[in-house]
Length: 447
Ligand code: MEV
Image 1: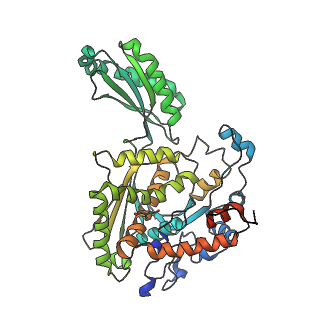
Image 2: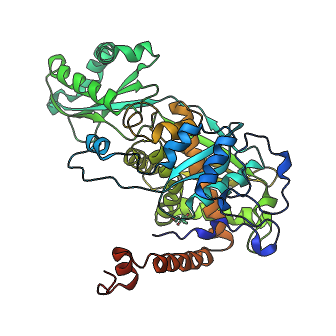
Image 3: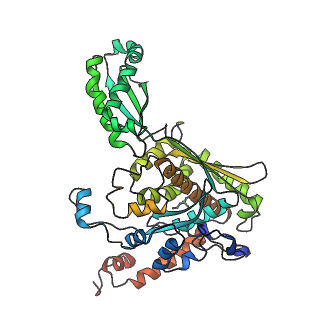
């Protein structure tokens, strides 16, 4: 386990103002009687036993009893189902499922399911969300679910100059052919939104992009079918050799943007005043903006928030990772996925922008026994709402990390976590693999 962000959630414990608990709730100075019944602020959530937490979600109407039961059954992915998902299946691999609290997104309360093995990630997300509540939470900019097919083709370099003109003559036909692949998608309000010719740097090498509104689906299958259909037709329209026909994970027509603000007084930490903390967080962001070595770690922290929600909702986290890092490199230098600056009244302002190609239908969403309950916990969002939720968690996670790194450092939390891990190894000493890891030595008599 590599968690070095345990004290991302320490808040202002040292100065005594608001001691942060691991659910991101503030244990003191809080009037909980004013919370609405369906609030994502659940004081004491972190201290409850697992079953009581599930009950709390049911009581607050975030989850039906059936969904709670489905989630509590950690072994519900049967080997029969798992065997249908992948080849050569020998079992399944479980991850803890946590719930990040405090999320207010576009004025709505959200509890965020996160499937993750790294301790303190859920707490840090909850903490970041708590900080953002002071100025209304997170605000998303709607985007469409646009996925893109790529069709690579090569012509004789002496013919290359003709291609842009020829492309204009077949633009409409490409759209018609692409739409014919998925007539039901058109009925659902989706379909091809545009086609584009890209000229690559090697003479005679081109790519056609077909952009498709895939509605509720992540869209990989939809655009791959289109790519293959256009690839089959292309040589009959112009003498060429067709290469790859596949989607791109760099979905630049599907960029999810989220913004939040935090009052400077809420950022006080490690002996720094709120305004000082704002300055330090902005400088921490600048470090990532200037230096790709730091940007890599900065974005790892962002993905600490994003991946667990992508995984929990049954989506393809490799696709989201690939898209995020390609997007971060678009300018030619690897850049941070977030931006932080000081607002006009001294508040901290943050924004995140990245492609979040996720769906709420298709893939394993219907088949995985937990995913339907997890989507229900999120209020059954559509694909775009889900992208906004996911990006909000990335922004919250980054806020917690930068505040802790800029104001206090992470070593205090790291050492606390180390102690916790040693204690866990002691408790599970009878388990052969853990014992071997803990001692880094020969098998013992327990084994
Ligand atoms: C650790 O999992 C994530 C951080 O390193 C992120 C960061 O440095 O911004 C704390």
